[in-house]
Image 1 (cartoon, one colour):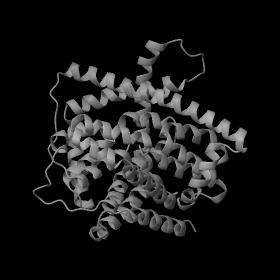
Image 2 (cartoon, one colour):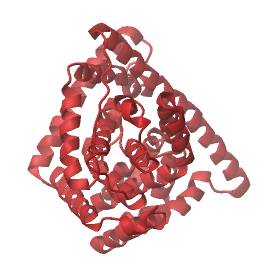
Image 3 (tube, one colour):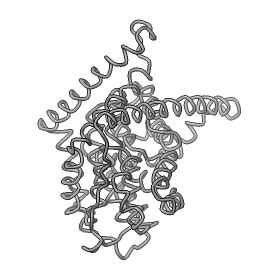
Image 4 (tube, one colour):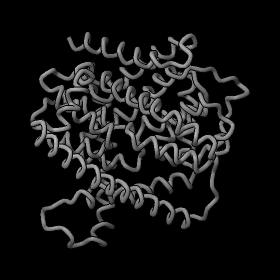
Length: 392
């Protein structure tokens, strides 16, 4: 039964993408089918094999060690601020982002990350039927972040037509940055975090190639990566501050969104006898069912999905943690992979702002297609959840 639901779900997702396609005649079926097969194979490899278990445990162990090192710095500054046995969210989940941001800066400085991004991007371009720039950008987004990635390709931003710009921005919204992967792993199962990151890479290309199909000529298929010249300690300082800014921004958004949702839920309960999240849960329940979630759990799952869309993935992960005891293990896994992306309304502003800071004209182009970007990025998350539902 789960295979039938997955097939229907896959057809619905691809159909919804096709519905708003800018050039339906130019949609390339072969690369799309190939990437769906690759997604299934990767999901099976990571979630259902001994090799995948070793890879997941290795990555989770590495991040666990990094969080321990980060804890040393946090304890030095904030020692005594929490009572024994307590683990404040800001200290244990958000502040480690500062340390991981520094590590990303070091890997960037010594050209390790650029090397990885270029070659993985090159291999991806042979599969997805798109250009080297698009493939590099997708990998880079997953490693350095949805706003920082545009700095690395800023020399080409001003020369890109809207269709290629859409793909770059859609990739940035469909992935997550390495700096916050450790934070995710403290909230949901690491196996689902890693699997979602890998599968989203291909999902982004699948949806973008349907919504926004085009062909890149050899003359256009040029990748020019911007490398900023800084001293080592200047770079260290910059990445420390960048990581702290991310932690503070996420904390501020959580305070505002969690408080706002609590107030709205209370008002709806008083007026209608049902919470706001339950209402939007009913709206998203059909998509949850298409993702392989049982009907009995679809409203709860739909509420968590909608929360992620209107707020951010952190708020939704907190909600998932609170509801986890009442959900099956399969449902928790499917929702978990859905949550691992930047597909939410606030990301429209982040991506448009990042591009506008580098090229005002192109930033305005991105802002105009903001809802279309969010629509595509959300379909990527649904697609990833459907692929995983076949495996678990």
